[in-house]
Length: 434
Ligand code: ASP
Image 1 (cartoon, rainbow, N blue to C red):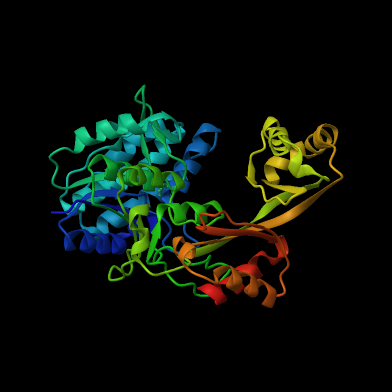
Image 2 (image 1 turned 30 degrees about the horizontal axis):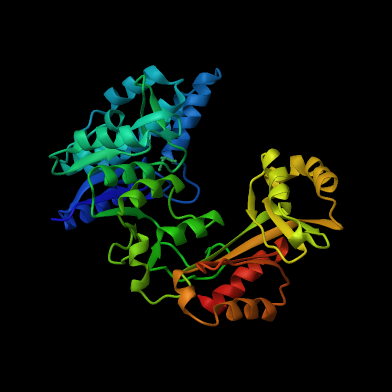
């Protein structure tokens, strides 16, 4: 039998109706053995996530406010779920214990997952294992991957089915610590690695990874398959489907991730697969993404190409000011360095002065408002005409391309446009390639 780790996000466990859908999904496949639960999320756009309420409760308690009304809101959320599902669960006893720790930030934040997983366990009759026992943190936000893997493998050995709360664990002193927001994805990934799962299912409220950002582009198609590397390229420019740190443990173990929609379990969602499988499907361009907030520093100097070490000196100046470079397109006598504006702005004057003094360029200019666009797909390396289609789409949309960076690996074409053209560029690309 296969082993599947199924993680259910906040909207998938937001109320009793969603719990019922989750039950049907779990019971439909006995391979779904390790279940990771988030805290109740929003039931509608105006609603509050329980994790946000818990943070608010803690802040009120820590700063002399009255947490009682927020605690009552939290109690009512869980009481509603318990009552409608008809489960036997002593919520008052659990809340009384939590009230002893009102000022502990990570502890409070973790209780949404803790209670939801316990209620799910009672509802499904599947044993609960506390993440406090098997997720180890170096410090808040940073898991100790190897220790967690050992503890988790030990805690889960021989288990037939188990429910584990996401988002938290403990540090070396036994103090509760959490991941950054959305961190139940990471717990699911750690569990999948520890039990050598065949598949990590991440159940959420979207049909999967989309070809382009749906806030910018109308009805982008769902991506059926994407490799970890492609996902990383797209996430870097803002595409988000799961917590960044969730990729590392399963990628290392070669376990695929399947993004699924709890509200449409009949859909197959998106498979995120290791690189080995990358040639087994036909799609040429997997996705597009774009993000504003970059600057491009461009230099020109006669005979630059024969000045050994020019590029190294230029990049060292950025490095010494703690500014990491994103791209570095160059010509014979020109070189440009693309950096994130947020990191560059405070160092701008000092960096430009040092470039003038140390490298004596003939010309130096800074473009402060660049958006980077990425067209990503392993299949591009084998197909002709993709670049032509990309840049024809830009020309037809009357968008000026300010810089281009495409390596010989050809998994992506990255180019820069003015920030105000970013969304139009994405729409034009979706029409041409989506
Ligand atoms: N409940 C936590 C949050 O809202 C963690 C999660 O849902 O993944 O960020």
